[in-house]
Image (cartoon, rainbow, N blue to C red; front, side):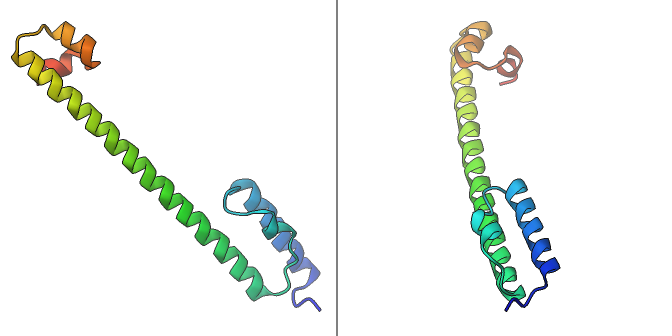
Length: 109
């Protein structure tokens, strides 16, 4: 015997389809196709999926941060190389070609 009314079950299924469409990594087919037997069960299922989705978002953010850090390190290394080349009297245009930095950025080193 289902604790939720047919209308409530339909609303949960509609929400599940929405969740699957807008958060495809957060909700698998189980959220939509498994019968929902009670409100607490539905609440637990949705809370679990949302928590898993939140963890994936955090990991993606951490990875993006690591990538930005690596990119920043590469840029700093280019600036250090350009600074050393500039101190040795190499022309700014040549430094720009080698490092990929703009001539303006090199002039400001």
